[in-house]
Structure formats: C-alpha cells, structure tokens
Length: 100
Length: 218
Image 1: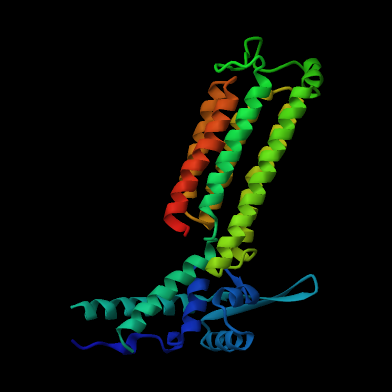
Image 2 (image 1 turned 60 degrees about the horizontal axis):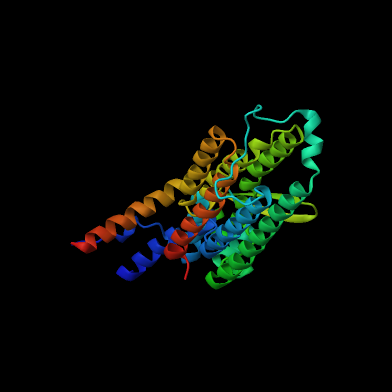
C-alpha cells in the first residue's frame, strides 16, 4: 500500500504548531500567556512557532493593552482553518491505510 | 513518519482542543461534599422551622401564596429567619471553600492552571444566571414572597449549570436540567420548598458528584 505523506502540511509537522492550531480551531481567539500555560513551552519556543504560522498566514494577530500590560491575541485565519482540516483529513487517511 | 507519530499527533490535537476550551479539573468529590453540607443544612433548617418537631412538616400557604407587606418586616426579622440565614451562609461558605480546595488539588495533580482562561470563562458564565437569580430572589423576599426562594434557587442554579456545561464536563448539563425541573415542580408545590431544596442541592449533588468522581477523578 502506497502511503502518501505529501498531503500532510509541512507547517504542522512540528508538534507545538499543531497544538497551537488545534487550540485556535475551537477557540475564537487565545492570548500568548494562556497558550504558554496550556502548551507548557518557553516564551521563545512559542513565539518562534507562532511566527512561523503567521508567515504561512494561518493565523492573525491582534495586539492590545489590558491596562498597561500588552496583550497579544491570536486567531486562526480562513486559510489556516482550511489547511488544518486538510491536514486532519490526510492524517485520517494515513491511519486508515495502515489499518489495512 | 511512522504510525506512533500519527497517533500521537491525533491524541495531542484532541487533548489541546479539549483542554483549551474546557476546565476539566472540577472535583467530583467536592460535589459529594456539597451535597452532604446541603443535607445537613436542610435538616438543621427543618428543625428550626418545624418546632415542635414533626416529620411531616410543610408550610401552609392557604391564606394566599404570599404574606402581605405589613407582615413582611415581622417575618424577616425573627430569630428563626436569622438562624436560617446563618445556616444558609454556612452551607454556602463550606461548599465554596471545599470546591476551591479540592479543585485546586486536582488541577495541580493534572497540571492544569487553576485560574486560567477556561476556568475564568466557566466562572463568568455561571455568575450571570446566579447573580440574576440572587438579586431576583432577594427582591422577592423583601416583598414577602418567601415561597419563591426554594424554586427560584433551584431553577437559577440549574440555568447556571447548563451555561457552565459548555466549559467543563458536558455531564453537568443534565444535572442542570434536573435542577431546573425540580425548581419548577417545587413552584407547583409551595410549602414543600425545603424538601425540594434538599433533593436538588443535597441528593442530586451527591449522585452527580459520585458519577463525576468515578468517571474523572482519581
């Protein structure tokens, strides 16, 4: 059985990026600190992965202030949602193929 | 990329979707404890209200289902009401403290943040029906509609649980619906408020707490 790994999105190969996208699929938006607490990763790791997703235009960023503290919120873009769904479908296919 | 990585990916997607939107460290055990406190409270309240003690007590609303305004101040500032108020506050405080302590312990064990995005949303969503209900009930009490306290407590608490169920275990929704149903039945039978109150806050909490405990705790 030929297994097609090409359909998997390269952007989601990294576990942290995959997790960020999962969170943004089910939440309207999520802020940096909450993401960090949830994923249990360092500031730097999270920031660089967010940047990568931003570069792919999978997420959009909104910066605001709560009082004097800067607050950065992330949202999944339409493009990102589509890419994630396709990635999920590809994962499902691969698993089904392996079952045979 | 091999099979285990695929499965791990899927597991982590699912885990993140769930944990990011729901607070899953609510302690089932604390539900059982709250139920026990409520039953103790109800028993004490029963003893206070129905003196001399009898097992078949109920309030007689025959002269109309509420007291007149002139009666209200007489009824509201009696030793009985003061004692009931003290019992109610004690049960509420003990319950809140227990929920907080046990949930904090469970969150710590599960590595979930106690006061994070999901728990904040959960508390906020519950507060809307609860504060509405509390205000409504307080206003009705000052107007002399004592009989409304128990049905309204149950109904508004049920609404709060249904609202909360989107942000924690889905099972809570059915507990909420049961509380609402009990509240409405209690409204049909004024005078048996304490009985329904004990069923809703005591028995149902113990049953549901046990259910959640066996399903998610440990």
